Image (cartoon, rainbow, N blue to C red):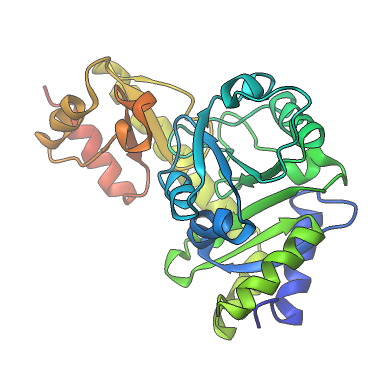
Length: 309
């Protein structure tokens, strides 16, 4: 069951090829939600160094700490990573795991094809393992995400890509997700995970396979987020909150220039809960994240409250 039922494996491989643009040799592995793999991948791979984005979902850092690894924050520009890591061009980084998140949580930034090609070049020139969290892939807005599997064009060695149905299909409670990429890495992970009891229950595997076979409900949800973003952003701009990135996903990343907790307080006084940017690293200390997951009626009410004075 750890490797996935025949039904699920067929659905995962078809999705990777038809939707994500995967080619060449690759394998797939169902996981118990994507958070499980973010938290435990460094431990399962015995990573000694974990490289994470400077502004990032906290579990990337937690996963490195659980593994006892050195955690290093970097910008997306892979050409500067060796300098940030303090390693020479000739150094091999076999025990290094690099996390990239596109579209990003919390910023909604969609990394360009050129940026991801540089990431893949770094992988090829260093033997580091690159893991790309693409959980918000289905929700492009002003920019359309491209899966790293497509950019890799079949060169999948030392590459893993994570996807989740929690966001794509609104199935957060189901904990349906998967990894795809390097078949040898997948085999290593399978061997450990099956002994650790990390297996998705059979009903969840079936539900995952069914959901991955339908793109229509995903398009409907993506349009909901696009409409909510277009309604909410003008109200924020009118109150001095400039949005940054927010090109995809289901969040707005914005700031009025003040300290993040002061901005949280401004919204709290209007009965609106937002997330302080420092939750995602010190680089976010003057930003807030606003989720677009309220109902349409809730978004409309939030706009009224933001605009009231």
